[in-house]
Length: 212
Image (cartoon, rainbow, N blue to C red; front, top):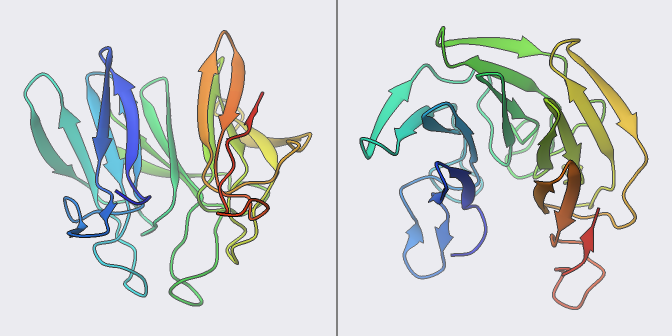
């Protein structure tokens, strides 16, 4: 696979969805999507079904590990690819990404749209201060951290902001030392670890740096 696959953990297992294969093309017809676990299910939203300049999609699907089955739910209000996802208190937040506007293969948005898994309804939330796609996402103490990403023109970002769902507001925090696109983010003992990503400074464009 080459980028675009999304993964997260649920019930002690790691799940991956979609992605791009250099030989066979798109896997499961979805690329550069977002995946987030919520109570008893894994939610997958957005992406695209063909390489750029195809349009992003707004599809939302939920996977039940217990039943090994998928169900299609109401679509996101804004079709997006390269977005991030996180779950707090049974609400799944889909953050940033690309809409294909004004041009199909560039641009970034700060949109935040929340799906309540109990009521099965969508709600628009306060947008990020800095619009970004391919942003790293982590949750600490029921707050969502958005770090790094792509400014929409392929420029790696070092921005860090935190979203408080209760206040529906973003707070800007100090930048991370190394700007990068699509880092992997993990949280252990309330420490946010930012791993790898694309920074344009290394020979192949990818960094192995770990920051916290």
